[in-house]
Image 1 (cartoon, protein in one colour):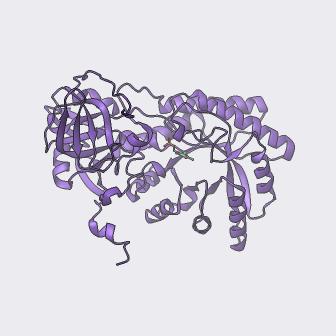
Image 2 (cartoon, protein in one colour):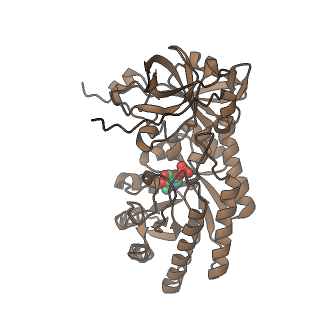
Image 3 (cartoon, helix red, strand yellow):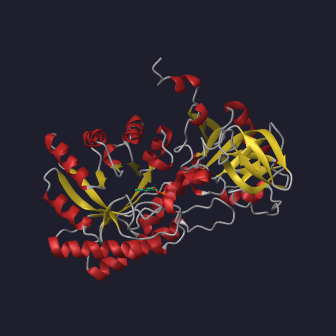
Length: 452
Ligand SMILES: Cc1ncc(COP(=O)(O)O)c(C=O)c1O
């Protein structure tokens, strides 16, 4: 008896590449079967840089950052846009974030090292993570980051001790778990009661942490943080979280006289991975958040805090694509066609991890209709090694180039070397020019850590 889930039998949608632009980088153009991003032909990029390859549209990234800055500034002037580097971290990306005047949130010593390599202004860096190591704490304090987002009592004590030893007082905000079940995949819900992240309000941990932070000499408590999850479509989850945060902040003010200067509401805005997805816009997010903060400040007569938001996915996901070369096509009559490419779960684990859906097309057949249903599968030793599951694609042959859309967030960052696969290169495209920002890994890179 098979334990594999039943495959849903669906009809091909017969769409062409041009029908998928909703989820493509904003500069993608398709004319006469030729597909360009930033004015450069994707087939030329695949030929010159090889596959598997991530391609980013620089203008799309800058446009998203500017839209966040503009929309939040117009609804709530005291707002700060913090790019969550975990979505896609590279030195080139940090340069762009710095140039656009935004902050960056680093979730590890590694991400901090990248920010340093980009000469990112350290007073625009936030340090995140639910279990920062003593070394990471020291690196962030030494670097002079603006603020730590603190998840545990142990971390508070470690930051305070290290800052004091070094003659500093480190600003911190406490990550609060407001007990919200955001409408998204369980693996990317981060603020429900049963979560490893932050201090729960309901069991008193948040209040204890506040008391501790106020008592420690090496830290200055400047406010609170919450991040309800990722790939969120329902803005009411933010409004609910803000209401809970203000009720808690008002209670703390009454009991301890502490008024939060900063309120950080994390990231999480969802994006369209398929043409059927309809996420909220950045403008709608800004209005929902600013509206709820205004309402709560009025309700509790609470001073307006500085507002921080930490978008990751909504900055880079649709800016990026992955190009692959088809190696083989296996027909399994009555069941499925498997199109195998030169990458897989090592450069995109999201399908295996969350059942994520993607749109894909064959670049050299962009003007043909997507007339077959197939799985685009990888080259790794797992049946779960699927990049695009049970979706429409142009009929294709070995040697064809496939473009998977919407892979700019959490794909390269979650990449692995399973099967000792070398990780793809990354190029950035803008104004008719391509520049390599991360070179393809080599066997020498893989062997470098071996003790021979
Ligand atoms: C604390 C925190 N902030 C921001 C983000 C970015 O979220 P997103 O990429 O959904 O915008 C995350 C992602 O998990 C996070 O954990």
